[in-house]
Image (cartoon, rainbow, N blue to C red; front, side, top):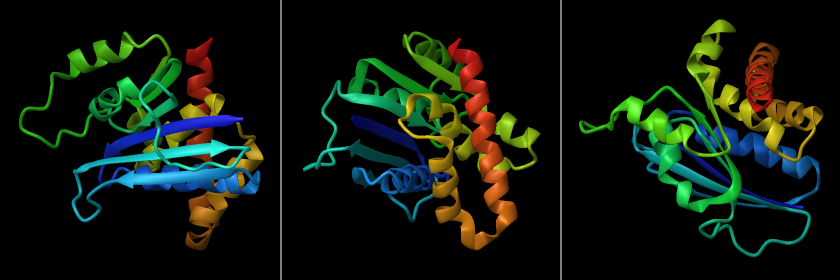
Length: 194
């Protein structure tokens, strides 16, 4: 078993929280994991990218070669497209459709959405709208992670463990809303995948 994941977005969108939940699920399964991040954490709105490599065999590098990522999980559409050269031919792009416009020459959104739709295996999700429906706008990153669940090698109990590890100190209501966000994203993805 070997899974290579690229997480993409901008500062403040919760990329590192997604990485932590996936990391905890891998630890629960006693798998090997390597993670690396490229970010300017002190700057909201700056590009954030994290790589995760998960395997049942020892890993020696956190780098993912071009064309070898199984998944790109992106909370921002332009940032998801940025990493397409790393995606396997049969890999999946899971991305939020709502942009975070942080530069003056941000590309035309319709053009971005069209480019995403050209990716053979993609899930395009309005995570902000779905998070608002469950009355938790701040959990849109977990909605995006939920949309990736059908493509990851873990069980629901593993995600429950990961969410509890990350958010448990914030109380049961925070844990529950993040689990609801995951389930909302997963259900959306399963409908799109059919």
